[in-house]
Length: 260
Image (tube, rainbow, N blue to C red):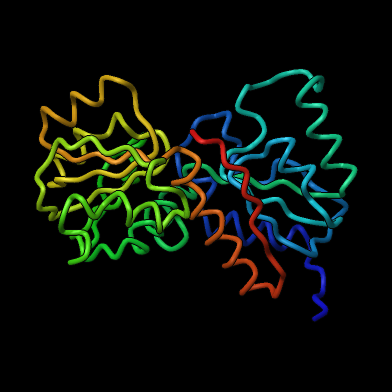
């Protein structure tokens, strides 16, 4: 099937509005939105979690839009040398555009990491909780029947994320009978108290500091750490699928697990 290229400017305008990248507060170095342009036309969307050199060099076709959660400029205003030069050179060689969406993707109600993972787990009666720079980012909801037992959580989450059960760490601070689950993907171990305050007996995130073990045990919350990377694979794929359906573009996901 032949697909017509879409103007880069048209895709960017849609993404900026759909994700509200100019409204959602984020770290200044996130640089949400178009980070690197190409010659002006996009024939394929490639989703990935990180704008790593490995990801960029894996682009097999020219004229792609690389859609990522973690962009290229987290280290701030730096010379175009070393790692930054190699990544930019690889993008230019492939005539690839780079678009990044960090917190705007985390909290999006349709394609956001937290909303998508909550839907995939079957949570019902969902509500928002957990503030990031004054904006609610997490999703909490009632556990479905198949997740009401704590010992079912690890294998179910592993299946959902496509990882092995031994990649999920359970801190069994809460009850064996699970009622309400909170989700904030990525590095949200510091939000255990917010999950508890929102009525959650179980909290799912990617990673947290060592002391969060005691936060979980003393607050009475089951905490599942499934990896920063793994928990944030769901949003970029949902967003790429959205673009594909709206603009009739092929899309693919480039998976580069970090084990972290």
